[in-house]
Image 1 (cartoon, rainbow, N blue to C red):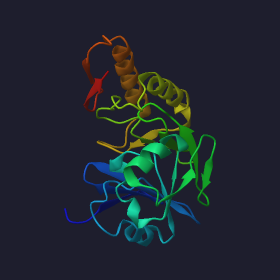
Image 2 (image 1 turned 60 degrees about the vertical axis):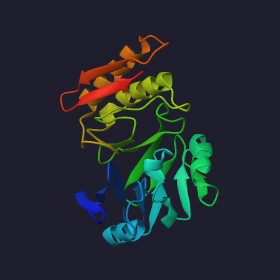
Image 3 (image 1 turned 90 degrees about the horizontal axis):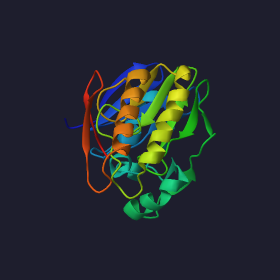
Length: 226
């Protein structure tokens, strides 16, 4: 693969693959956002996005990990939860203008709205975006069919489990989950229940050592390190 691969998932929604991560371009009538910029493996990401949707494209981040921010150099500003700003600045410097992406914010795209949900755990500032009208949840790295890493200093198993419970409580508002890694789309019920089960097992693990649990989620074997 020598360029970004793209798939049109539905009107106003595209998946863009960059190595092991999926980016989502979400467009309304007046505005579009790219959810994360990936590894930055190829040039021309911003131009490709704008050609797909015919609109200027703002950059929005689910969190500050490098596999989600590597293509940021094609933008001069981005939206990110402030809790992740220190990590972003440490890894990418101070040249990017960062705007706060916080709980209860609503991104108005013109005929399409995205609600910002703060779902800490994987990082302090992890967010998900809820599209109620289209019944979609863009979950970042909080819900996915592969390992959810919680071993970094800024990760929290307690916060992660609380975030899963919150997303479960909101699940009547969405039918489909679009994660940034591995298989998509996911059904919220099986994915959330399996990850909650993993989190409960991890909470019972010996805190003096690393214990690994495998759980068959029906569509993939998920490994949760606690």
